Length: 360
Image (cartoon, rainbow, N blue to C red; front, side):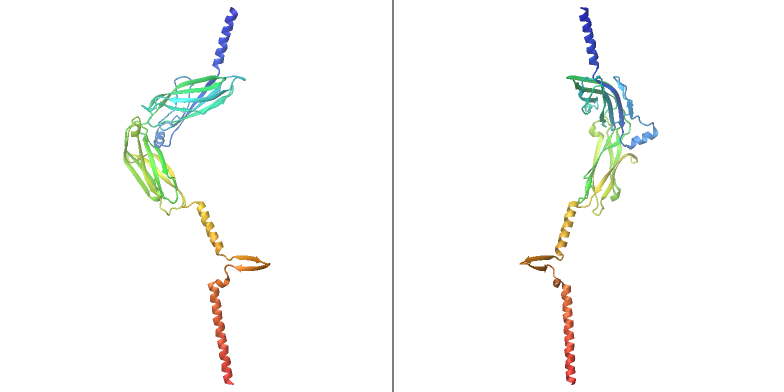
């Protein structure tokens, strides 16, 4: 009986040891990339540099100690290990998923996944998961749930952790969220459409916002003035504004790239954001058309040149010139002039002989 009890205890311990092996999160790194909005540069000149990196503690409800703002890119790098030893099973179809809960009032969660990969026993690997933090996300703490799944030896392995992500917002934070040129390269048609979208990522309602489209090379300077945007936690449609303008390039412009400036002003003086996009002007006509045109010109030139055609018949070779020298107008004039000169000389000779005969 004791032997049976010890055997059962041993099996339980072995089962516990086996179940402890599998997938394990050994490290979590968080990195934040900010856009080029001028407001960030101005604040950094007055305050401490933003914390854009954090090594996250591996415990539930740990806080991600990095400054995350709307419009920034947040990248999680998760290090995963297959904790089996020796020749134990490979874990396949592994992927990590992160869900940032409560993105907004009605927009649900932010969810991103890594690619799939496999891990041999005792090996580890890093998986990157990247988020673009939306402008309309609510400020404050958000739950970031990390889940990892994999399959090995017909067994599903899972692990995970819950973290706290704090979203921060500035009072005044205006951005140029999108810029496009359609088309971005022009040739025979010298017209393009420039579109810019601006967004309020701050916690205040904003008035007196201006969008400026500026192309110095053609003297173009277009304003869309007195724009109002709601605070970023309001209706997503009310925190954004879109402007489109037509750009016409004069036909005589040389091929090249010309900078187009999109400026975002606040209260007529503060430059909150700026984007520069190139408009490419190409020569009218493709290289293929030019080649064909040059080939046609060359063919016409060859056709008008003097050509010699040899016709061989019964052992006799006859040379025929397609453009004979006698067909030249200049040659005919020279021959005519020589004929007249010869005729005059003959008349003078005859007149001289007649005078001489009369004198005798």
